[in-house]
Length: 380
Ligand code: ADP
Ligand code: MG
Image 1 (spheres, helix red, strand yellow):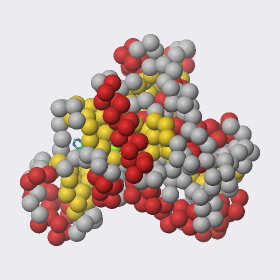
Image 2 (cartoon, helix red, strand yellow; image 1 turned 30 degrees about the vertical axis):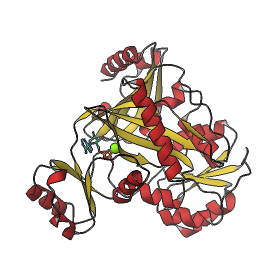
Image 3 (cartoon, rainbow, N blue to C red; image 1 turned 120 degrees about the vertical axis):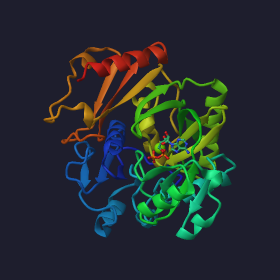
């Protein structure tokens, strides 16, 4: 159900998913005077301690969806693997963003890549493997490559690097014969992301481009402004905008890019929600990506995206916690006037689990990076 009448505080906003993204959304919405209902089956969901209402039920629980539809003025999600049909059902009763159709595209690498190409934008060379028969194609143009499951992959999970056709066939079988894409391994100069907000009615704002460094397949640091050519950063922003338009997307859309050795930009993947690489916007932008999510779902104009200071965001994984679960040593970080700690309130620290992040603001991105790395050494 589309609405062009802005939704104003103290309306109740609903969100599917109560992880750290839902938590930061909830804080932003509450700050603006909205009320928030979170749907999440986890009793300890990070968003729950800030939400007005926590519906503890599955994402396809009909009674819970009905309650959301009846009590909320607009609904969004922080969790891309929410059943697109849940969003489509909700959309019959209340404004929903992003749409179930956009969620379905972002959930499936085969559809995602097809839509990126349809929008006139570049992806890595890839072959869609819908069934085992598709392995009979000539695989050479995609090798050496990465076989990725079409669905439910994240943080490098559901991916196998393959050098030969024999390895690709074996990996496809190992992944259970499910739909996959075989993507050519590209020589990367670096990786960047651009986060675009498109509201209803169709106003668009793009955040400054972040440069993202990963460790073990998980985002480690984001550096803003990205240490790339200004024209290339502007091109990434333009590509993100073009994709949001092509999808008729409403909400916050994160677009991840590969910067190739030759300087070309190709789109790696998208996320239909605020993104880990946009956490920096809370501390370093006029408007945060979470406030943008609120604004987009409420039919308000996106806020200004100006960067107030160069910034580096560092993810804090459970690995930084002590073996007995004891807290890292926060003392030095907490004393730094230009460092900002964000913890997600998760009770159990597990290796690879995103427990929090911090941002360091400095006169240059290089200075912020140096200090951010030095602070990390003080935690252990
Ligand atoms: P996830 O959904 O797990 O984030 P991605 O498709 O983004 O999966 O892949 C994770 C990381 O693996 C990327 O950020 C990049 O570092 C590397 N990678 C993925 N695909 C390619 C590729 N085609 N060429 C080179 N590196 C790649
Ligand atoms: Mg990725």
